[in-house]
Amino acid sequence: MLSPDKTINNISDFLEIRSRNQALITYSDLTDIELTICKHYKQIIHYAFIYHDKDTFESGELKEPHWHICLNLREDLELRKVIAWFKEVSDQNTMAEILLDKTRAFEYLTHKNHPDKYHYSDDEVITDSKAFWYNKEQRAMELLNDILHGADELYLCNKYGREYIVNGAKYRSKAYSLRKEVKNPYIEDNKIVDMPSDEYTAQAIVNQIEDIKTL
Image (cartoon, rainbow, N blue to C red; front, side, top):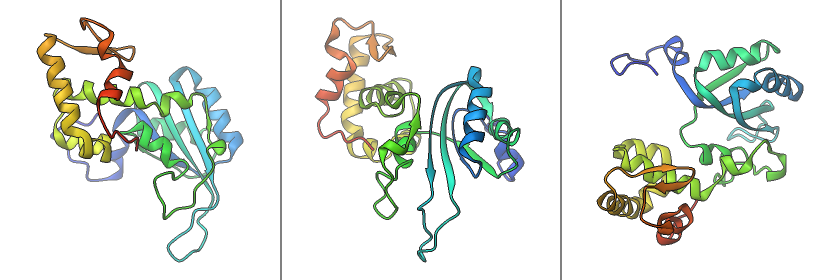
């Protein structure tokens, strides 16, 4: 990542940002995308992408067809490096940004929570693992883990959006109760580790927090 004292004041600085999860838009074709993923499969753990050919401007005019891509990488990589993967096989424009919330990004592929946009079918999404991108239990565990490790309010709101804004107090209450019972609680393989029983499995925590709605 950029150092905290470095200001992002131009595109070059932005492209130096490193992230394991990245969201891209490309005007390449399907063959180029599949070729890129195959060529760099050792650096890609999970992927999901979809073709948007019915997006419109506010005027109703159709936008140029493009692909939205979500990538989960094995290590933090600069945005420019991942963009370069696609430029190796195509001269079409490709853009990238940090993907903070994988579930929300996955849902955006179909515009699930955007009533003002065209809704694509779930069947149009090409992915190696829908469970990785869209997992309610894992999402709850990640939120608890972030709280237990001292994430601030702004970070939590940006990452989890409406889910944290609405249910944040309940998550914090559960996290604090875990901290009282265990000196150094942490999460591994979708479970709170070092707990006295299986009471605090991911499903149990999801069940105990009322009105949780996946973004």
